[in-house]
Image (cartoon, rainbow over all chains, first blue to last red; front, side, top):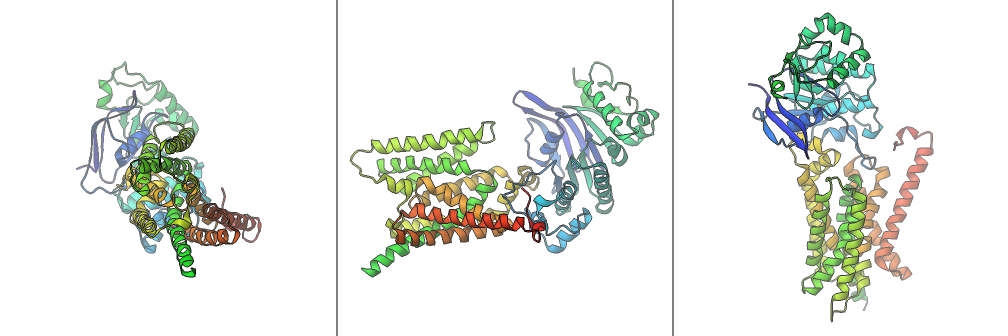
Length: 261
Length: 277
């Protein structure tokens, strides 16, 4: 039984359909990454899963008692709100100093407990958010562009930490990421989203292809290539998706995409 | 004569500290959530509650509470719907004050001292008023205490609250009710125009030397109570209006702690502890 499954999820803001007919499921211990251009509904999808956004149609089924740890895209703490890292970890449930220290250690933020949140660097801040998400002993860890604003070594370190966590804690991970080299290296499954699921693929297959090396081999160029592919996409051919010159034969088209005009 | 004098001063002191002890921690949330105008709008609308209460011969407290609740609910449901909130709240705050003042003028045959409602009349606090004030203040403190963690989480980020299974809208409602209660009990003490000051100034004064939200709320409550007591004393010595004097003392605390913070940040030895804004 999957931890969480979405069936034909649709979300509209006013007259705009942000998500339509999104269906997928996440099993225990899986790392699933969502990629897609800005405005493709990635954050809305995650917010639906944590219960912050009510779907207009469709269903989200969580396994009973599912514990979700959520790391938001960014968190603005008003400068008028004093907040030490230690205090932050006890929100909303109080945790012992021992639990807090363990979580900080797991997130690679060992020495930060007494610091003020507003004084942390971007990377430290994200690790503290991660530590807080770990405190509920999550079965599913959700990260929304958690490395936004980090430099390359910073985000590489962050994702290494996440893979370590999957190994040590055994939790499933659902993340949104722009960093394709990381996505390809660290995910079990990649979901390409643009208002609906364009395609789902196993990155190992993609990564072994020579086309992949040409497209995604070096960081920035690879990223640009994927953006172009997303912005170009049409639904007038059998795959339901214009892959440009890229990975059509390595990725599986999602069933939902074929129902679209 | 002395004992009578003592007792009205004692009642005033109790009333002032009662309002301050509830307003200051609530004021922290008003500051953290940037709801300053929200407090203003609710407070200013309460003069309309005074007019209605007198018109329908209800207790003033009840009229103010009802109108404050309506106003606070209206404002909080309008927020997050894409209005330009500062403009909208500015419009609501001042127009509700104006409507209230006009409504008061319609009251035929009732002599009311408008100044008492605009600036408070703490020296005229009765035994019943005192019970209402401490009852309301106690209820506000109880609400804040019971929902503290959830309120803080929702204040930090609604999404974090949702992910933890909380409903940030319910926490918003808790704050709305608490705000209406504080307005209703504070009107007698500092009046409609200065209620926001009791919410904001102690919280702002407590910020520079607080490391956690709890310490800030506690320090704000202490500063609020000291301001109430010192303001009462000063207004008696200098023969000045009491409500405004209380606010002046609180502003003095704010100036002191802000200055202290600035000096601390200038010193190289303690510079590492300085906060960035």
